[in-house]
Length: 411
Image (cartoon, rainbow, N blue to C red; front, side, top):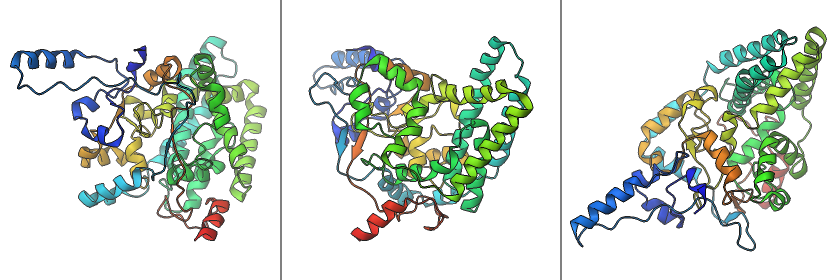
């Protein structure tokens, strides 16, 4: 068995029923901690001494991922609906009090303001710094800070910073400034499609295009190159699959970003802008926080398409590791996602989890059973009129207009 059993452990690869039969202890092995069979060995010893009446020891977890040596390897295709709407309904039937957690988090704007100020000040302060110190601050501070800003924009795409959608959009544009490249205004419609139509071919641009997957497959050098440049893939892929419409907010985002970059360049010189751009590049590459790009939806356990991570990096990433909770309850802000897990522990503690973002990066690159095809895709599309955010109006300018027209024609 390849060294691949490090990452997400505990999946038996037997579909939904097999996953449902996994015990809590077995599912706890679905982490990126090193695989250990000591508990199984101990159970086997106990059972052998107990005689024939003992309960058989369950088989060890199957190897993660899929066999890329088989001809015709492909994404895992499903024709059912994504799992989160159903689980949300089931949890709310048991715990209606979770609805009390809905709504904006007022503290986010202050955290974002402090991060924007920090990055702007560091960019100015490091303009004449020696390269070793410059690059060290880029990796340790700058990349972490810019990644947190990406995830603040994610929060505000769900209208979880302010009561009105427009305020969240403007807040996202301000959070975008130290990233150096305009991004916030075009992110929301793609991300809403990711929630509404998780894995749907041609709609969810979070998944590699078939052309990408055919080239990368499970080849370690290409997987490493892909991860190194993954922000470029995330930025360019949607423009080929679903080019974004040019809205007023897109124009404002572009104008604000050009003005900020030009002012920084004029006042502080090219190294100040280079600091921010390198921070953005590194934060989406081989950086610990970038592990969430893989851990969230990489199909490590057969048929399981969303995973949560409960480790310490959540403190600097707005709890994006609570990803099952977030997809189940996109109305709940980052600060209250741990409460969702606590209240509905019986629904989350038995799911496969990611134990380390650094570990999943390593496993993705080195494990021959993980690659570009390790994602769940589906063909069932949900109407674009379904709201992901409760205070989004259909006319707020961020809805997928083309998809909305297609759905209205079908209806």
